Length: 216
Image (tube, rainbow, N blue to C red):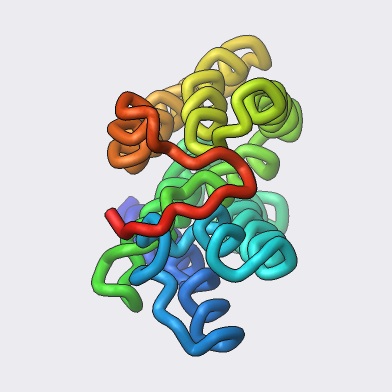
């Protein structure tokens, strides 16, 4: 039992460090020798990279950040599919997967390499969801897409997607730990968008393609 707990902690630590890889920060340093945290919204996520560095860097950061989340879930699943730890009961998979997903999301938004700052976990969260359940992931992306087509506001669309995740988890009959993860993760993503919400209320949140000049 103790070894299984140690393995679970180890998975969380590994996926945290995986998620903490500072993609957006490195893009700013490598491409323009800037600290992306000092520009736009101050986030290291794909949206701020898009506004600050352009479409191609933003797209690459989006892809890598999503892959971080997907890989974290894959690591947890491989422990069981490859039977890497024979003493670990199969029932633990339903708990270890959300734990790995949480590690990646926390790593991305609270990166140890960025003084525990980072992005808002949307892209990493999407990668996590697709790896957990492709149906949930695609349905969430669809909600984001519909919202962005109507509002042209990335943050509003990210929040809409975060709110919808729990509903999709229930519709597609995901395990209870995954539903709990969706609830807590959704709240966390919304909380990470607090500054965006304040700007939306004030009517100053930029739309897709617009720049946000001041850091928050």
